[in-house]
Image (cartoon, rainbow, N blue to C red; front, top):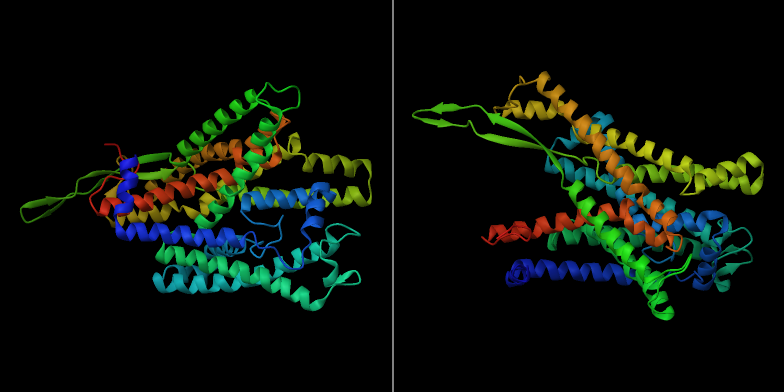
Length: 457
């Protein structure tokens, strides 16, 4: 393994790409620690500790799985999620809006045009989200309080000039991150946007582990934990559980259902071409992390609604609904969460995988699935197989999604922010991007007749 790593840095072009990627990621992490000028960090810390109305908890959850800094109010506070949201919107529109669908089929020119529209939509999303966020900092999120420094306030309101300054700063921060991701794509190792998200997720892990586990163990001594306290035995269980979850995620993420295909034989002169047996790989987790993102985002709205109703009207029914939706260990929340994940798994798979198109492509290349006639029979068979493996993928995603809740309920001393690294969107994104990064490096190594990082000797 060390020999393979050494070989990576002996290739000048690959070494330059890696160093440039690390430089761009370092710029991103430095900017993530530059706070907005108008924000008082002490007041903001007090707000998130008090968790007024559960809004602080929600922002911390969003910040964890979206790799943003909404709980710190930095210049990169919105992260890269507005651009991701804009990309998802155009991908969904491409399946229902004919002009956009035709633009997607135009190749490189169409892709550039869609990227241009995506950037414009990103700016509008950034302006809307930053307006809401600055309004939240002024005091709408915590009635009667504000997280703004006194010198920037005009009575109880933020001065209009500084309001405009904060909105433009956060919008420009996200646009800069979008540009930074494009530079990683062009001059770095590739997949810049995904690497930025993974860097934001992994950057939270050391602080959580050190602050929540290692530091208390050092101060209290390595001893067996009593009821409700962290001990050395709990630490060992958490480490083994984390490794087991990562192995499971890797196994399912790389899992494929290989459908055998056969190409027709062609006789040209005295030579026979084709007739080879190949495989059509269908991913078990075809939808990726999208179902968890959609399900968790939609569940936030009823949570906020019922909490607001309980805080303002306080009836018994409202309190019951607020507890049922806001508690991550409640049966109502988990059942709805799993049901929405299953729904969005099938929904996203139906958008990203078209059996009819795959059948037509096989037919045009002179290939077929043994036992099934080309055309409708092949498309029906592919759809039947995809429905079955999507059920397995959805079950896996559901288990990964509720894993943090299971860890929190099983180990009360484990913080919810730390439990989030045992599943959910964060872990799936980190594993998927890591594998994609390894494949990018392998392509450079194989091109120069070296063995890949995951290739056995």
